Structures are given as structure tokens and as C-alpha cells.
Image (cartoon, rainbow, N blue to C red; front, side):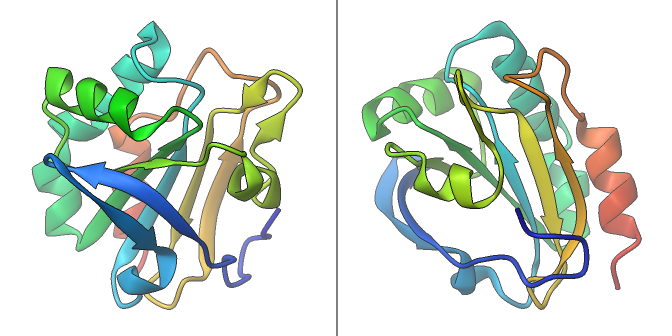
Amino acid sequence: MPAIGEIASGFTLPGIDKGVRRDYTLEEFRGRKVVLAFYPGDNTPGCTRQLCSYRDAFADLSSLDAVVLGISAQDIDSHEGFAAKNGFEFPLLTDGDQKVAKEYGAKGPLGIKRSLFILDRDGRVTYRHVAALVGVTYKGAETLTAELSKIE
């Protein structure tokens, strides 16, 4: 798991954003603030509330020059339906083998644990929260905007 102050490990994952499927690399977002939001599953009550809170704060997050990347183990078809149903304006990435989640300490015995990492413009971890297991509660948009506001 990357520690506060460390450069986050790079990755490439397939994903979808506004109906467009492609591979995403963490490196392509260097120069911007990045939120990595690992979540247990599409179309579950807690995950829907969490990602909808980010959707509802999308303008605020964008004004802070931040990009949100939602990451779970579901496939692209599942992400596509979940994103369309809820009007998400940020990419949802597929970590099917949970290799990236494991590298970030977000893989638990029951799957991906609800986890949040905020990176500065250089890719350095400035904030992290990893749930003990799957995690019923989540860090909402208020936490994101507060933490992102601390980054130059």
C-alpha cells in the first residue's frame, strides 16, 4: 500500500467514460489531482450512494482540477450500465483480477475494500483511507473537496 508522501504505483486498466471504452493509465493524469476510488461493486446501495455523491460534486471537483477514477472488479458491460443509469461523468475502471487493488492494499478476503487515495499533481499520495473489510460507510464528496483543496 502506498504511504502518504510516496509516488503511487502506475497502472493500466480498461474502463469506460461517457460510453467510450478504452485503456486508462494513471500516468496520463500527471499534472492533475487524482482521486482513486476503489469500491466493492456496481449497483449496490453503498457504492451507488458513494459514486453519486462524487457525481453531484463533479463541478466542484473539476474546479479543483481533479479527476475521479472509480475502480472495481466488475467488467466493462457492468460499468457501462451503472454509469449510464446514474449519469456518472468520470471513468469507471475494471480491475478484474484485483491486481491493482492488491497493490494499493484495497483487496480483502471478500473482494475490493472501499478505499480512497488522493494524489497530487506529481502522483504523490496526499490522503488515503482503506476500509477494514468491504466497508459500509464511505468518504463522501465533502472529504474529497476538503483534501483536494489542500493540494497546490
